[in-house]
Image 1 (tube, rainbow, N blue to C red):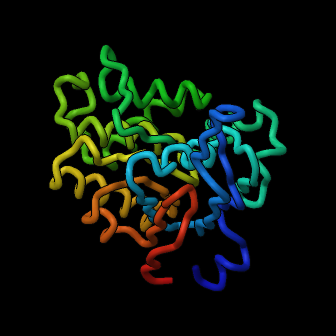
Image 2: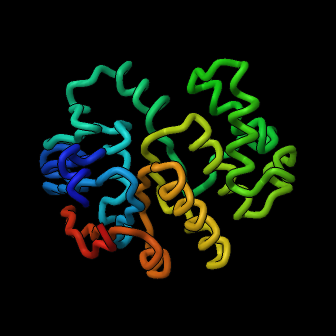
Amino acid sequence: MNEAEQARGPLLEARGVTRVFGKGGNRVYALRGASLAVGEGRLVALKGRSGSGKTTLLNIMAALDTPTEGTVLYGGRDAGRMSEREKNELRKREIGLIFQSFALVPYMTAFENVEFGLRIAEVPAAERRKRAEEALKFVGLAGRMHHMPQELSGGEQQRTAIARAIAHKPRLILADEPTAELDSRMGRQVIGVFRELVRNEGVTIVLTTHDPNIMEMVDDVYALEDGRVELERVNGG
C-alpha cells in the first residue's frame, strides 16, 4: 500500500472477525479473529483449503452475513452499524458479487442477465442498455451478448457473470472461487479481465482460490488457516 492509500485508509478492512455457527456443544468456529486490510485498486487473493472459512469471510465482507464478534469497515464505515436497508444499498451500488457457479438465469441471454442485474441495482432504464453493452464488450463478449447461457462456454458464462457484476460500476468486487469451474486457459482469461478492471477502472477485487497459478497473477495473497488470516505476499506498492 503506497503513502496515498495509507493516508486514505483501506477500502475494506476486517478487524478481529469471529464467526460461530451453532450453540453450546455444537458450536463450530468458521473464523477466529480474522483480520485483513485491502487498499483501493488492488487484486487480492484469499487462499485456504476447503472449510478454512474463505467463503464465510467473503460473505461477511459483502455484508451478507454478520460476524459473531469483530468489525468490518467499508471506506471507514462500520457495516455493523448499518441497517439492513443500508447494507442492501451498499451491495446494490458499491459492491459486485461473482459466484463459482456463474448463477446466470438460464432463460435469459447474456445481455438480459446483465441488464437484469442493473434493474436490481435500480439503474435508470435509459442507462441500462448502454451499461450492459459496455460491460459485455469490456469482457470480450460483444459478439455473444444475445446468446443463451447454454450456448456459451464456461469461460464465456463466467465473463458474463463478471459483466453483470461490473455493469453498475462498483468500487469493490468480491469473487468466490471464480475460476474453479474453468480450465487453466479460461481461468487465466478471467484473471486477465480482473487485471484490466484494476488497472483501467481502479476497481478493488478480492477473490478466493485454490489455484497456485492464479496466486502468481494477483497483487496480494492472504492465507486463511484455522479461522485466522495471514498476509503471505505483497506484490508491489
